Amino acid sequence: MNITVGDKIKFKRTFTEADVELFTKVSMDEGDHHTTPDELGRLVVQGLLTATLPTKVGGDYNVLARTMNFEFLRPVFTDDTVECVVTIEELERRDEKRISIMASFICTNQKGKQVLTGNFAGIILQDEEEVGD
Image: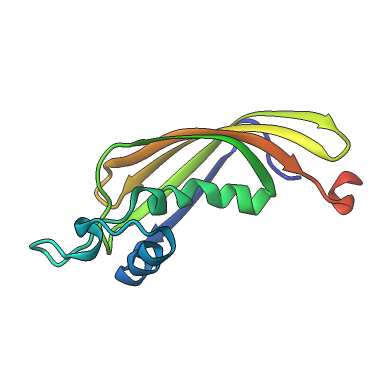
């Protein structure tokens, strides 16, 4: 495993109308603000779709989540580009195949405004190859 306490993992995503439409179908979150464009032709991105940004770390590092806390600060719209910075706060080996992780995150739109903050905790499940490292 190649992360340590204090590491910052960054990535960006631009949300599209197709993303919102697909998430609307999957989540059944069909609020008018997700299906009817505003005066600028934008849809509001579902909060939980925005919250998929920090969960990317979970997928990248094989994290089985235990808790996730989100504070939604302002709306995200289609065509917004959001950067997520995840900071590794704690790592603690539990046994040969499991490491506890706690991380915080800040998501910022292209205007530099924070749109989402929070934290998550869980267990990193290591496969046989990683255990031997």
